[in-house]
Image (cartoon, rainbow, N blue to C red; front, side, top):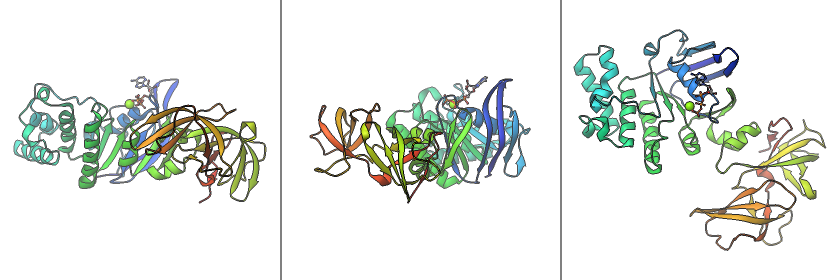
Length: 367
Ligand SMILES: Nc1ncnc2c1ncn2[C@@H]1O[C@H](COP(=O)(O)OP(=O)(O)OP(=O)(O)O)[C@@H](O)[C@H]1O
Ligand SMILES: [Mg+2]
């Protein structure tokens, strides 16, 4: 097991295109770190540099205390699992799992022992003599993970390992991976586009955009206190509602903002670095917007544009007259009388409203 430290890492594939820009990050020994970010932001490039499959253009990579920039991939003590399982079709499962050890000259009895142990952990013992073509997608992915486990690595790297699986299998494998981490306690770095995987697996999430780290933190911290508009809009499904507004009042721990048509709302944030008249963005998550009860004060009139019934909850897409953005509201599944075209009123609870300045940086929330 080992920590992984990135110090001012940069990557250029060509002279003038920098895909990773000065990334620094300290990953603790035994930590489960999840990288997320839009397609092309550099997640796989970062993993491949850590694995030694790609040169590091600038900066320093430490695995444990040792500088690893020039250490060969096979000597880094790292095992990587890819989205494409990349199994050898002519070898059995056992041979696939043991192949790296065979190349490394490990004695056959020890290879057998380690393959059996990994197969037990992943419940694939009954598959050991099969060829990959006789396995389901989920079983193949287990073999690919097993192949990483037998190497007893200091660090596991996963690049979207579950993307090819159907929803039920994904959930199943996600739970297995979580258990695997609890059992092995090995450092894991995991790339995914799946919000639920990121929220549930990570000790800390790292949000990348265009080769730059936007924020690092525990899943809940990131969800509740995104440091900027990018992170606010990236984490969460459906995404946070973001509304253009103007700062019109600053009170102790409360900012007053105005939306078009003279609608004023309050946010429990410390906005003293802003000034009245500033352009700001108000953010509120769909589960925090709620339907007004009776003639509740401060509620905003709106119209229902679309209703999606999702079983346990309903997503209502609503329009506020004079405001461009369509807002999504998460409503309990038993509120069944809501329908297209309904005139409703919605409440923006002050404590759930986030506020971002013109540069997109969040104002600090007041607890
Ligand atoms: N071998 C390469 N040569 C040149 N450019 C590359 C190479 N590999 C990746 N890139 C570019 O580097 C950038 C980052 O790519 P990378 O594969 O790391 O993104 P990613 O975050 O993993 O995206 P995705 O979520 O789609 O997998 C992209 O703009 C990509 O086109
Ligand atoms: Mg990728």
